[in-house]
Length: 189
Image 1 (cartoon, rainbow, N blue to C red):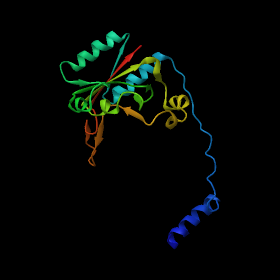
Image 2: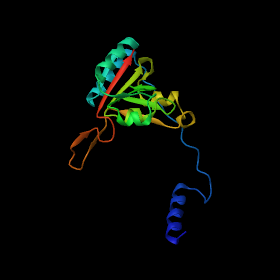
Image 3: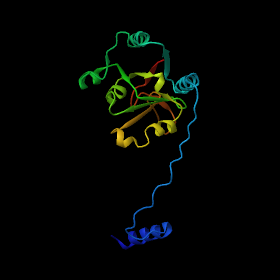
Image 4: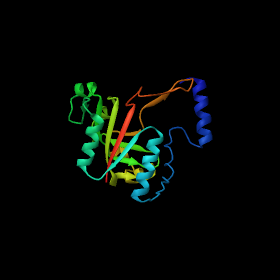
């Protein structure tokens, strides 16, 4: 290790009041806050947040009603699901997947790796996510109260907030560059 590097690390250790090789102190306590709201409020908040991002929320009362909506969005285009092969997913126009949770305050979808393959929600230009309304949470804090150590329960947790979008240095917004440009959330009550 160079002398300059040792000097820098020595100043950092001194500022942290730690001796070389000493273990780091325990982390501070986690401060998560629950904001309980009614299901109606969560649905409204989710729909509004997703709508601001150009996503569509369709609230239905049954699986058959959800299927009718999905059929209307697909409307003759090729689609894929978790049962599709990788090649089918790559060629599909629409990906239909389940999601594990929704976060009302930001219109975010949460998918754990044990669920549908991520490719279904990432590769096709249109993504239709099916969410059971009972799994709509108020905030990320509420999710982390349910899954305090997500890495112990799943290999990955993907948070999807609206259709894919990116902007260049001139701040020109483009949708669908790094994922689906169209997002529909079918929420089953």
